[in-house]
Every structure is written in structure tokens, then in C-alpha cells.
Length: 307
Ligand code: GH3
Ligand code: MG
Ligand code: MG
Image 1 (spheres, rainbow, N blue to C red):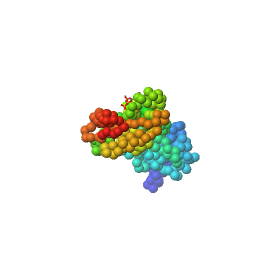
Image 2 (image 1 turned 90 degrees about the vertical axis):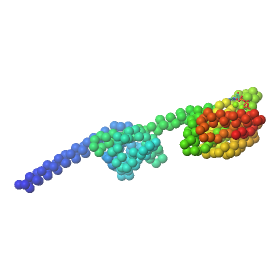
Image 3 (image 1 turned 90 degrees about the horizontal axis):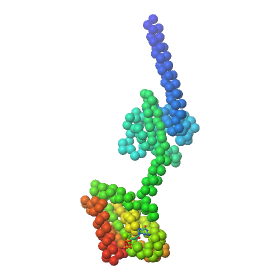
């Protein structure tokens, strides 16, 4: 009697479990069809493994079926890498359980050489079921970068403009103060440039500025920041260099300009001011010192470097 009773209870429990499993399986199927409605790459995942990926995702990763993708990649966290993150939240295979900390995380996904940037959004659907969507922001970022690049260039010479230089300078000042990283500033001004304009016209004058910018730039290191300070004045911020290094650099530039045959105009010279960052300098003080040095170079006869 007791045995029959226990058997009944076991059968009922098994039946209930079966119903529950069927229900969850049906619910999973429902969720799988639900993610297909999304045009963005969307994944259904448990705490650990991926359960489904929509067509947009399969297309991106070049798989025709989810089964084929799942065979190669079980865990979604292996398919992307976080960018710009201060703390790496997205680590380990059960990263989705930390979703409250991770809205709109910027991630990078690539398959073969096709790399794109996405905002990742995770929503918990029920216990152990999460929908993860990826919004492609690569184009937006590329456009933003292109606009930023245009905004920091000088229209004529295509080197950095004064506004970009000022930003670099304030960063260099902060680094010099905190990390004791030395840097120097070189200011150069074309000698008697007014005469070039008067004699050959403003367009030729512009052409000289472009050629001069190219000539100087070709002799700088990649870490040197070269900008048009305004008019026919240019400025160089030379990182990790002492004032003797920069004096030598300025003198090399001076010699190369002096011997360069500028189109139409022929020979030209420039005067240079050089100054190194000193403790407690701010931008105004440092620039004043380098401007004074340039002024001395002009007063002492031009075509020279003053420190
Ligand atoms: P010095 O520096 O040796 O004292 O003489 P300078 O003749 O170069 O003196 P100044 O700095 O007074 O004159 C600079 C001239 O540069 C004045 C202006 O006509 C010219 N200039 C400034 N910006 C541009 C530009 O964008 N294009 C052209 N073509 N000329 C410019
Ligand atoms: Mg000038
Ligand atoms: Mg000048």
C-alpha cells in the first residue's frame, strides 16, 4: 500500500517536472523566435552558454545555423572585447549575472578581419535567461573622429591648429608637473615674410607656408607636436627632450629652411625661439619665455636660434 502510494507521488512529481521542463522549453522557443524580430545582433543566453542568436548575428559571424556557431563558440563573452572600460566587468563565462553594472558597455566584435564597435545592452528576461543586443555604432564613431580631426587641423597647411596645440600643451604641462616628464617648445617665424607677399602675391605666400610646413614636419619625430601658431609662425612641442636637444633640432631646421629652394620665391630664412618647461610654469609663462627668445633671435639679426 505504502509502495503504491510512494509510486504515485513519484509519478506525480515526475509528471510535474516534465510539464515544467516542457513549459520552459516552450518558453525558450518563444524567446528564440522573439529575438528574430530584432534587426540588431541579438543573443539569448543563459548564465553561461548561448542558447540562440538571431539571423543578424549569424550573418555577422558568417554562420548559417546557430548550431554551427555554437559548436565553435559556446560563450558569448568570447565573441567580444570591452573597450574604454575602467574596470573589466565582462569577464568569465557567467558575466551576464552582473548585468546591473553593465548597461551600454562599448564593445568590439570581429570575425576574421571585419571589426565593428557596438553598444551592448543586456536585459534579464527571467531567471537564467538574458537577451543581449548589440547596436552598431562604428559609423557614428568614424564620423565623430573625422569631425574631430577636421576641427584640429589648420585649413591651409593641414598641420595642427592653435586650438589643438593649446590642448596638447595643457596636457603636457600636467604630465610635466606630475610625472616630471620634460618637454620643450620651439617657436619659429619666417623672416621678412611681408616682403614675400608684397613681391609675389598672397597666393605664392600661402604656397610657401604649405611647403615650409611639409619641410619642417618631415624632420620631426612622431611624438613631436607641430602646429601653426598663426600667420607665418609655427610652434613645436617636443616631448622627452632637453633644451639642448631642442636647440640642436631648431638649428637643424633653420639650416634646412635656409637651403631649401621654395617654389617661385627661392631662398627664405626663419628665426627660432626655444624654451624648456620649468617647475611651476603655466602656459602663459612658458609661451612668454619662448616668445621673448624668438624676439631676441629677430633682434640679433634673424636666421638664428635663441634660447
Ligand atoms: P619678421 O618676422 O622678420 O620681423 O618680418 P615679417 O615681415 O615676417 O613680419 P610680420 O610678422 O610683421 O609679418 C607677417 C606677415 O605674414 C604679415 C602677413 O601679411 C603675412 N601673413 C600672415 N598670415 C598669412 C597667410 O596665411 N598667408 C599669407 N600669404 N601671408 C600671411
Ligand atoms: Mg610674425
Ligand atoms: Mg615674420
